[in-house]
Length: 334
Image (tube, rainbow, N blue to C red; front, side, top):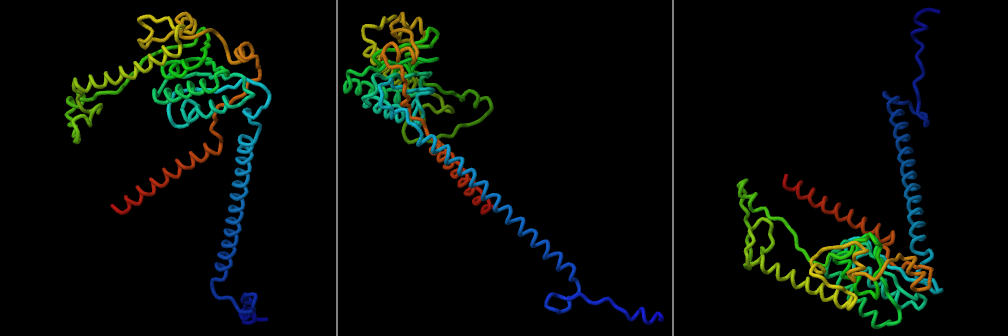
């Protein structure tokens, strides 16, 4: 056997499954196909993983929603009980526990329920909107006339001031803790004025209005004496409305002093002395001793999980839409 015999032997060319010989670079083709198949399989696993995670999340959300929405509703109890409605936080619109749109339906449901022998409105609020407080007060007065034999008592938690007390005086009685904060029968309008600062830094405010007082309360414009007088007159008018509501609600129990309607606030103990409150008590003690119905049923209009999710979803969608619009405008400008 010579060298020519060795040199004549060549390795067999690789062939495809169909029997045709592979072209040059077949190794690269095979590697690319293997990589593509691996990538496709990885994507499929990722898609299924996302699907199962979303399905699990949906199941959890549905379970919580079902528990909140379809579980036992306190207001559906048929035995005699004390109805409880909570106002916790600022009195303002927007669906919170201190808004008229939440409190008024709860009051109507509690009054209409024949199993509720009495109603406790538990308040823990520093005040807020006189409009929302006035709407709730008016509805309490209306319902009291409609259901004269069903008492409504207020139980003060930490604080019942300003708009919170505006609501409280429509109740038959007000009970406090000796250390609660009660009162603040007054009205305020606050803001800032930056005109002096702008003069110092050399900034000019350019505000055009149609109407002499359209820029009234603009923090970057000077306030005239006439505008100050107008604002004070408006505050005095709302303050007098507050005073009238307190006098009507408390009646002869109120022991007026020069400080009663000055905006001051007092402890629960002092509030009882001044006739701003009737005595001391808690939700449980009032239900037990005043209404003789120890079972307390919550009628507060709580915002459910679906509503909270939808609100957050709506806010996120709005933010996303705004971002898209801004991005689109930016891309067009550039």
